[in-house]
Image (cartoon, rainbow, N blue to C red; front, side):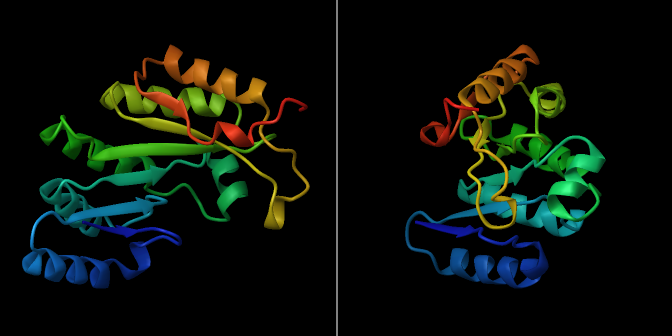
Length: 185
């Protein structure tokens, strides 16, 4: 009932993913939702087409908002911030066409030493300025791969980030993987 594009960003294969999705929707029997999880670095025309497919099929578009500050974003991803927040606004505004089931959701990984309460506060302020009911998930960081030298996200860090997002007016904020939080850092 769902085709979800994630696990590596779908943007580089957007024309193919859009064509495959349209074909699947044209042949569906029953419910078929089209969903995307993305870093948000899309061509705006293709992003609008992807979001429109999700809007029409009951799917979602989830943006991974790594950081607010350009320097921190580039340190974490290796690329400039680019159109990320302009693209997020495009989809978040389209979401107002279907308020009963959110089209747009966002998440942020709480990387210790990089993504602090202020980063979360600025992201939350941006989201709340569009729509305070945008679902926003904070994710605990677990040290793996190239960032194994960092500690896991502490419970105190997550609680502070959660508080900051709520103070900025977001109504639907949660910690998505609280079982990874550490009580020791």
